[in-house]
Image (cartoon, rainbow, N blue to C red; front, side):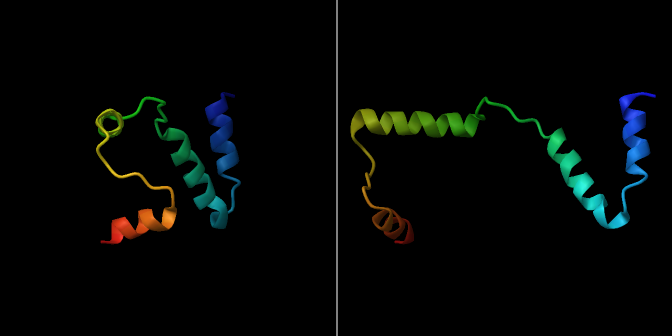
Length: 72
């Protein structure tokens, strides 16, 4: 019996009220987790590096001030 066949056999024994857990777990296994950032993230990193070089952008030493700046 293959591993896949064994999995199907076990799946048939899972109670209906627990099947959602199995679905969630399997969906998590199918996600392609890559250590490579996507293009949007890379662009954001580049933007921050440029801001550091030019001194542009705001700096915050206090989270309250950061949140205030985002609200206004």
